[in-house]
Amino acid sequence: MRQTEQKLLVVITTDDEAEALIRALVERGYPATKVSSTGGFLRRGSATILSGIDATDVDAVLDIVRKRCKARTEYVPAQALPFPESIYPAEPVQVRVGGAICFVLPVERFEKT
Image (cartoon, rainbow, N blue to C red):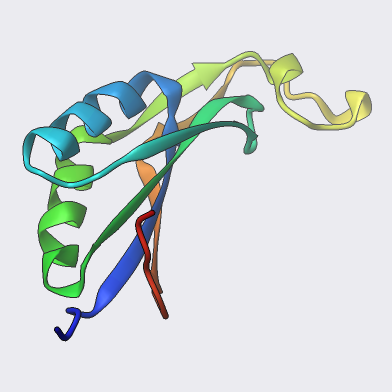
């Protein structure tokens, strides 16, 4: 039996958006595994979601990600940013938050044991 081409989708998003994204993926039959992570410019909690999917499903899954993980802007105190103390702006700074970073990787082999 010939296997269809597989892809590994790696989605990095905020903790706030991760649960709704996982729910939406699983409801549509796509597997999803969440790995908690921290990082990024604001050092806020984030989630890395892994999903092994058929190559033909990549666009459909990315569409789900776009609908569930919306980028937006927020104002944050300058002291919360990773700037040296000597160059803090006096007023809150507008930053982009939310949304998702997506990587689509080829899968050479997949086995479920």
